[in-house]
Length: 52
Ligand SMILES: [Zn+2]
Image 1 (cartoon, rainbow, N blue to C red):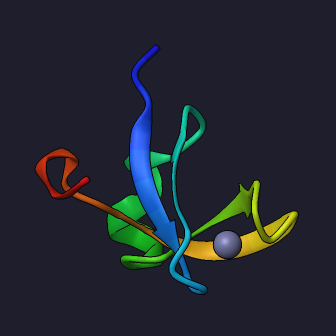
Image 2: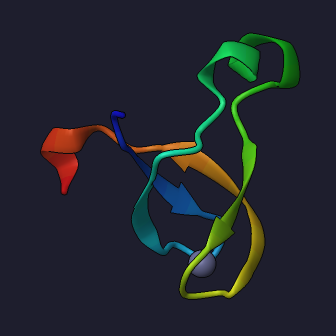
């Protein structure tokens, strides 16, 4: 399974394996993913791997 690097609304960058890419076009650029630093669901956007 491939991980996707994302950034939450608070600026935390982390990787997730549960990024629902198939629904990205329907729901817009933001996804709700549990941020390990916020410890809650955050709206996140994908980050280019080379930007880490
Ligand atoms: Zn966060």
